[in-house]
Image (tube, rainbow, N blue to C red; front, side, top):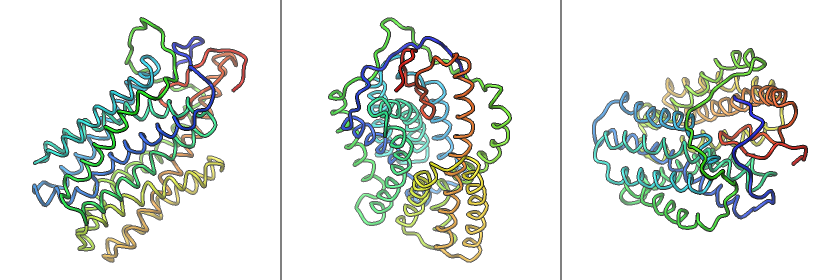
Length: 367
């Protein structure tokens, strides 16, 4: 976390633009809907192509690795080159990944599509969250926080319904998402650029990760909870639909979509309910939610009961999102204090929850 008294870009305009913020929110929702759309299809892919649960886990894992690595190197890309060009690049890559899924006839295509999708989503989430914050400073943080979760939720739900009850189950959802992306790409030029970049500025994609001394003790205490939370979340999102199909002997893809819908939907609702609570309370609720959710899921597995599996997954997701909020709030608060101290109080705004900076010239004026 590097501190600097001079930033490379400035916001073009501080006035709120609700329509533009909603456009970027819609695009963010489509990206995250696309990220969860393959989840209900995984059991169908397994039966059609006969690959193992290990390979299925790998298909999910390569997406996450591509996403995280891209976030590391491209977090400040839209600060250096502008929001709109970076968003356009991300949409183009996402459209290509939808084309790969449309043409897929084996697990290799799934791996390629998920890697492309991870790169595109990593570029997009940073730039889109920053664009939302730039366009509407008041409501932007909440929109950027819950939009991805609800996008994942409804993407999985609609995908499950289409797979279960519409023609071309392995193709239709990706064709619809491709159409939505191309439509939004056509509208993107009508949006106003929200940052002014420095002409001739060299492009730097080198990640810089530093942990201020004031944050380290808290970070070490919450890391085990964070690892447990996301390990459980990854398990449910990658293997949950297959688990329901095999344990409960219920092979309707809509049930897999319902599971993948419940997880982020309940998580987003948890953020809305608990966002004003203290990190300590949220961490307690989240920790107990993780433990209780796993216990209920195990009861569902042993009892071959679908509703227990769904209830356990939902409870577990409450734990995941509240612990994510708790450790994020605790660590970010300390990091912001350390950053303000390093800058001598001269930093005007800090976009703490967005990998891309909300850039503004240092000065005494408050937002």
